[in-house]
Image (cartoon, rainbow, N blue to C red; front, side, top):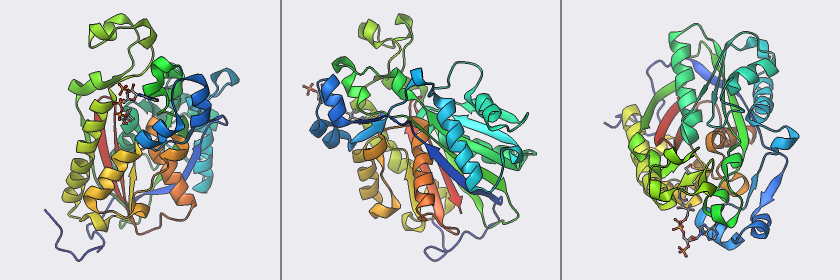
Amino acid sequence: MKSDQPDGAPTTAPLSGISIVGTGSAVPKRLVTNTDLEEIMDTSDEWIIKRTGIRERHVHDREAGETTSTMATEAAQRAIKAAGMTASDLDMVICGTMTPDMPTPSAACIIADKLGAGQIAAFDLNAACSGFVYALNAAHALMVGGPYRSCLVIGADSVTRYCDFSTFGRAVAVLFGDGAGACVLQQTDDTAKGLITQYMHSDGGGAKHLYIPTRKGDFYDQAEFDERQVSHILMHGPGVFKFAVSTFPKLIAQTLDSAGLNPEDIDHYICHQSNARILAAARDRFGLPEEKLYVNIDRFGNTVGASIPLILDEQTRAGAVKPGQKVMFLAFGAGLTWASSLWQF
Ligand code: UT7
């Protein structure tokens, strides 16, 4: 159902007052260009740009101590500073990640401790590339329903440790990069601001298209077993591409319909960066101008849970995201998972 309000009219129903009051991001120092990849595997700058839009990505150095939690802590410190707060003001940390430093403790517990946030709620949420959007929606619900007034939401991944940087793994390795992004949510009294609507979906039946087998028994198709594939991302690229291209427009339409809004009512579509062609298809489908659906995959690759908060931080610091605007976050990824979160800033 569409709104009968004039185009661009603000949503009038009172919202939660929960507001994104600070953002931050961090990427590893090491920059790997397509030309660098040409030297270690049979690929080409031309192939990578044409199929994905990626030119370079940042890759963490585990030996030098760079991990998901170190990148996330740096991003979080920047977000807290931008919010004009200190870590002791936080009530909760949720980290959307599929690559915590180790299976336990959670990255969120490590991050909360490094920040000096005290004995607050802290947990990870694994929805792969949809992790940040799932975490944002979960944080909002917990803040509305619980005693939490300030929450740090992070998307962080060091996914390149599951990539095989040889010609055997080239179809996957060229796509990914590492990074972290964070934002601080705060309860305010301004009920013109807050979450307008959100959706979260999954389809475990599609898990076989994108997963990380850790032993022979994990392979969905035993005929695909190859020792070199163990502990590396196994992706059926064209299958995931088809899923993404068809799911993205449906998710946008579902979110707009639920809010009673039209595509042009949204000021920013902040989308998971997995392939420039997938994003261009969504732009064309809804007739969106380039500045409304910003793409930075050329500089970061697919950073999994970090890709959306990296854009949010870039756009916020550039002054592009302004109070009073509507921002739709959209993601899809392994699981399969897909999710949206529409906010009134
Ligand atoms: O967050 C979600 C994560 N994943 C995605 O969103 C990925 C979605 N899928 C995609 O973006 C695309 O499927 C890819 C970019 C991964 C691949 O593009 P494609 O157009 O689907 O290529 P393809 O897999 O069909 O491969 C085409 C050719 C193959 O060679 P042949 O069989 O035609 O001789 C591949 O072996 O390209 C070859 N190829 C490469 N060549 C140079 C695959 N990877 C590379 C490479 N460099 N890195």
